[in-house]
Length: 209
Image (tube, rainbow, N blue to C red):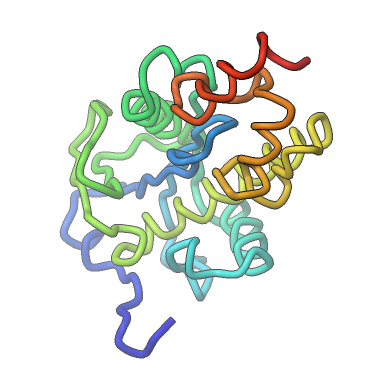
């Protein structure tokens, strides 16, 4: 991270009625797998150092921080399945995953800080924060949890369908994934509402089990 790039802090949280949770998602762009959201309420007394946008961290650092957060913070995880993504569209499925993540918290938040410019109806006050994973510590923590949890899911799915390389690309449309999709056709974990998957379906008869 360059010296000019700001690090997330607690200013947004300090301006809100608590408990405050940060919410972020992982997996809007992939061609396969669920979209995963996380909601995190931090405890300032036990908050780990180094929280940042998950994309700025190495995989090893994300795994370490996720493990610490799972022990010391209040964490909720929610996902929307491939079927829900295809039925609702990715935006509405993301909002659904966020609602499920907030609902999974052991402590009900009074305010939710949400990465991006769209907020789900959570039954509490909500505030959207553009680039929130780079500006709010709670949202940064949620970005780490969501990314690590989704990567774990895709690694498990990779054992079933190793030719797609999901342990490496997490379902994103990398060259490796697109070439395998063209060669083998989509499987049941692909998002049929996404154009590259539909194109592959048109070249193959049905799904590959």
